[in-house]
Image (cartoon, one colour):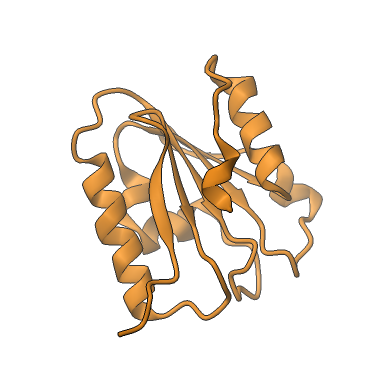
Length: 137
């Protein structure tokens, strides 16, 4: 049996969730596993929260808009979700337009270039600076 190529969990319980992949071979089973585990994490959320999505090794060919992401994943339409911070794939560059914050309803998307930048951004919009970056390996 193949080892799952993802990790989903809380960086700050109930406040900052994170998703990451270990290598670029991401299967449909990995995507389904991410969705299932993330939905399980969010079932007991009682207050606004944020998600960091680590796409550094993802084999994407472009940066996706918030609207495209929300159509692809029900998680990104959660009524208590505030910020989605996406770390871009290492092989892509962010254009100026992609670096601005985009909003749809109460959800805001921020694309960044590194895990450290993602944590720094969330610390700037939320008072809790205790994000453990060891989660990302």
